[in-house]
Length: 273
Ligand SMILES: CC(C)(COP(=O)(O)OP(=O)(O)OC[C@H]1O[C@@H](n2cnc3c(N)ncnc32)[C@H](O)[C@@H]1OP(=O)(O)O)[C@@H](O)C(=O)NCCC(=O)NCCS
View (tube, rainbow, N blue to C red):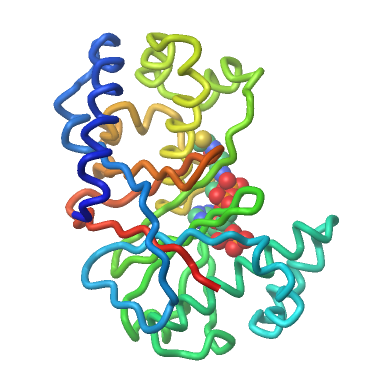
């Protein structure tokens, strides 16, 4: 495991463990699962090697916006069709930049030209590398963007999910929480001091989204199949998942979902260009 994750993880785990312990939840399970990624090392994406770990790339979409027009040439006709459906120019540019960076990154991992990559899509739209590219290195990925920031997670041979949210005040938090969270998650949220609740809401939310994105199932998952307070998968026969909390920068919260049994050697990388 990367050194950057270790100490921060322990410090944060202590605070969260106390809150969860107060709520009567399983603190041993929390000890096993909680990790934090907050350090993103600048790197140019030349032939990166996964070495059995997971890379999480942080990309500042707006810094690449001036290049958006030229990046369009990396996208496929169906991606350009999607780009053209955005109502606002800024959203369109961010989509183009995120897809172009995704292609350049995956191209670097595979030693392939970015424009040549083909994607296939799951029933709920989860993108993956088309079979011929996947066969080259079993590279899997997931992408999330919020405002000007994107996270791109890349792994080998396992389904992963990543989610990123810009934090904003949640006036409707309690109503929304009742619809989305499991009973254990609601209990943990209720046990927290009010000032901490918005942030906790986002932490739980991003873990759930990351899980749903790892599964590729979208809205179909019932809340009680997962309990992200202990990061165990609800005792309903689902395989266990592990979660890395991502702190990508001021005003953002993120999470990565990884199947249990996969090494949590997670490296934060900062896209330099
Ligand atoms: C697909 C979904 C997961 C995307 O979530 P989002 O927060 O709106 O957007 P994100 O930026 O995190 O992710 C979008 C990216 O995920 C990928 N994606 C699309 N469908 C996906 C799916 N079914 N599974 C995993 N990844 C998917 C794509 O790369 C997409 O970006 P792109 O189209 O620009 O390439 C969302 O539409 C969805 O169904 N959410 C479920 C909501 C829910 O149940 N919430 C409850 C838990 S809090």
